[in-house]
Amino acid sequence: MSTPPGDVPKLTEVVDVSKAEAASVASRLAAHRAAQMPEVSEDDLVARVLADVQKQVDLMLETRLRESLAPMLARLTDALVREARAELASTLRDVVKRAVAQEISRHRGR
Image (cartoon, rainbow, N blue to C red; front, side):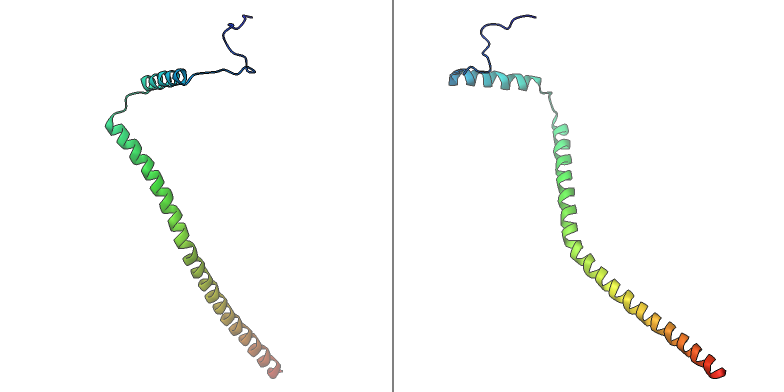
């Protein structure tokens, strides 16, 4: 194994860095990052921005639609359930009425 250089601080040591040194390191790092970034054409940039905006619009539209449609669908569902119950009750009354009438006519015929 190789030994580390002597000027590298250990994790337990406090390193005093002047503001000028920190600014110099920061500017070199920014320049290095800028040099590594690929050149982006205006069309590519526009396409990226439009894609991002489209995603945000889609998400916002879906959220707003859900918020506005949920109460309306709940009311419609309640109305549909009430109508179905009323229709079922009416049909059930008719079936029972017919069954009772058939039973009465059987008993009278005897």
